[in-house]
Image (cartoon, rainbow, N blue to C red; front, side, top):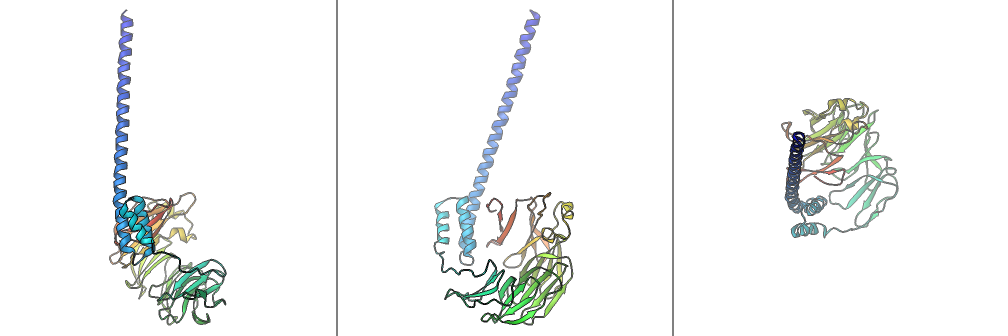
Length: 363
């Protein structure tokens, strides 16, 4: 009898313990569900606030950059659907319509360039040199091939007396826009061109070489203004008014360079958190080793980020930083890794950047 009573008492105690465990588990699940619901609610509130901000930015960007305004308005309407957001999105896109289609001639376009009043368009075709168009007549001004077969960068000179074309060998060729006859030329080096950029005032061409070093060519005189030795730089950003050039180099650094003199103003350390990961990238693969760079509209902010494209390391944006170009100091940083990302532009508020993620969402 004593044994039976003890057994029953033990069973009752075990049932109580099991019930207590179940109650605690249920309470933990309920608390987690409540926390998840609160988190989702907070995220939704943040989305609504961000959508409203994007819609407001779209209205401010409409006059200066309709394409950016359309992206912002549509994204704002997706994040925070409302009558106001829909109206903003409609007001941005309602006047967009196709004026004319200029059909291609030889192959994919490598670069296009408008002249100052947007009456003439020059199209650098990868396999066929330069094809100029007249916008009003919607026709090619000349069907003959230009003096450059492989054009990497194309622009109009500041006086619009010539086109400025940079080919794969780094030659800066200036053909007449009417006849496409060569007017001036600056020869490249005995080296492979790694990257190039035409300054926004269209007076200079920046060239970066695979063996290392940068130089700047004056468009008007065809002379080299300055040459700067250093690691290969495959990412370039130029701001003529601010007089600054940013070069993302293969050693993981970014050089801020005075555009007039070629002096290095700041050497910014943009290496990833995992330095060993960068060291495992072969030195010859300069593209994945070089940080990306982008300058704000006023040239006061520089955005840098890295992207390691190696099979055993994965792919992703690392360390998005905003730097003050005058002091060389970090003013903002997002250290976490994103999925594959492409920074598109600085937003009109001057405090944010817009980039496209792999899932086609925008942050």
